[in-house]
Length: 287
Image (cartoon, rainbow, N blue to C red; front, side):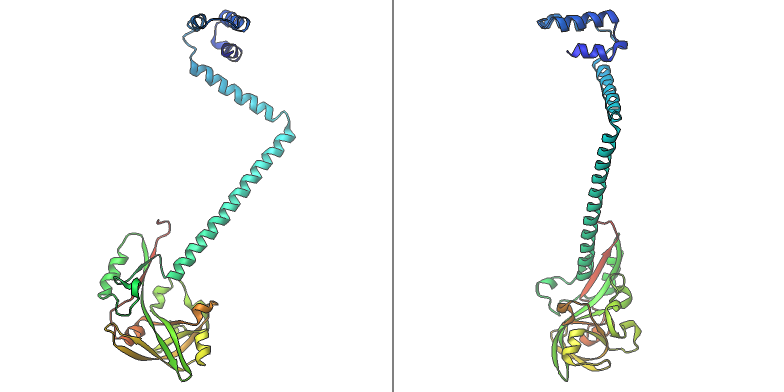
């Protein structure tokens, strides 16, 4: 049957007498022995090879398929439209999924404070105030010199108590450089009232979460006292003035958050030139 198919597909490649003779013998002699069939194959013209045969069969199949498509135009248009719509819907769904995944990654980076966080050795095990980095100018320079680093954001993190005449609250205070911090997020967008850190002339500004301000019954300009541990373990107290109220909309954050300048946080802890954390932002597309 293979030779019959060849004879019908590529008559221009075979001698006409041989094609007719071979097709007749194969179709009319179902009991033709294997050796005799091999003998017949040996007389194929040298210019015909198996690759030539399958090449012609391949193109013939495409021609038949193309003609069949336009034999029933309505059916072809309906099926083509269904395939195109399904493919477009698949791409749309994948785009939504990829965008949602990227948004989750961006929010995770923002919540953590950077793509990479640099701390003193052992900080994550205890988060103790005495585990801080020294020689921070050299550390910052080394981090910023790494290929693929977009920004390095210095921070001083203080876990302590903030007190007023109406009580005390646990406080998670971050001393930041407002200009550098904007590379990751602009906290002034969450400012409910008051002035942001780079908008005030005070040397001891502090911005507190909305719930902290409510619980301590504070007004803008009021004094609060921060109680925390210095790097050497000594307990210290520092005076700040409330310059702003921040509201993120997340209760767990608004009831503990506090923000001040990096210089004010260092002065409060007697930690000049020291840092608790460096948030590193990498270039887009890096793994």
